[in-house]
Amino acid sequence: MNKLSLLKNGIIKENPVLILLLGTCPTLAVTTTAINGLGMGVSTMAVLICSNIVIAMLKNVIPDKVRIPCYIVVIAGFVTVVGFLLQAYAPAVNDALGLFIPLIVVNCIILGRAEMFASKNKVSDAAFDGIGMGLGFTLALFLMGSIREILGSGGWMNFNITADYIDPVAIFMLAPGAFFTFGCLVALINYLSKGKAIKKKEMGCEGCPSAVSCQLAGKGGCES
Image 1 (cartoon, helix red, strand yellow):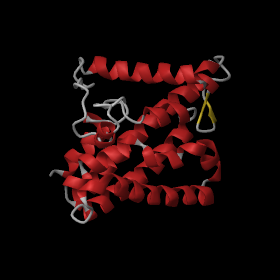
Image 2 (image 1 turned 90 degrees about the vertical axis):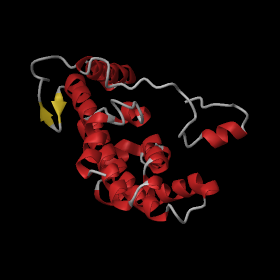
Image 3 (image 1 turned 135 degrees about the vertical axis):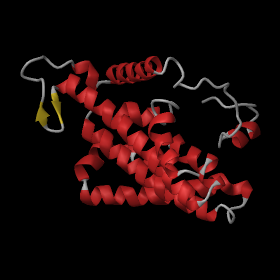
Image 4 (image 1 turned 30 degrees about the horizontal axis):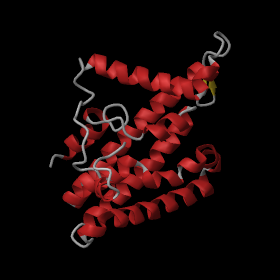
C-alpha cells in the first residue's frame, strides 16, 4: 500500500474530525487555545501510532473473541505513558487538558483504526496510517483552537493579535463558540468540495467495534 496515500488519506481525504466527524468531544472541549489543541492532538497521535504498530504486530496472536478488550489494554498502556510524560515535561498542558488525556483510551478514532485498519494490515502500513490520522486530528484541533483563541481572546500562542484593535468575542471561549466554529469549518469543507467531502453513509453496525456488545444488550444497533 502506498505510504504517501496513507498519510494524505488521514490528513485530507478522511480527516477524522472535519471529514469523518469523529472525536468531536475532545475537539469541542479542549480547543479553547491553539496550544491546548496542539497538545491534545500530539498526545492522541502518539498513542495512535504506537497502538497501531503493536496491534498490527499482535493481530495473529490476539484471539478474535477478545480482540476489543485487548486493543483497549494496549491503548490504555500507551495513554498512561503519555500522561506521565505530560506530567513530567509539560505540566501546564497536562493541567489544561485534565481528564481528556485519560479519556484518549476511549477515543473512537484510535479504537476504530485499530479495528478497521491495524488489525488487517502490516506493521509499516499501520504506522503510516497512525501518522496520517494523527496529523489530521492534530491539524484540525490546532486550527479550531487558533480560530477560537484569536476571536475569543485576541491573542494566539502568547502573542497579542487583535486585542488592542477589536474587542474579543468571549463566546468563542465557551461551548457555543466551539460548536459554531466546528460547524463553520465543516460547512466550509462541504462547500469547497461541493458536498463530496462529508461522506453520507447509511448508519449501521458493520465495522463498528461496539456492534457485538450492542447486539448482546438487545439493542439491535448502535446509538452513536
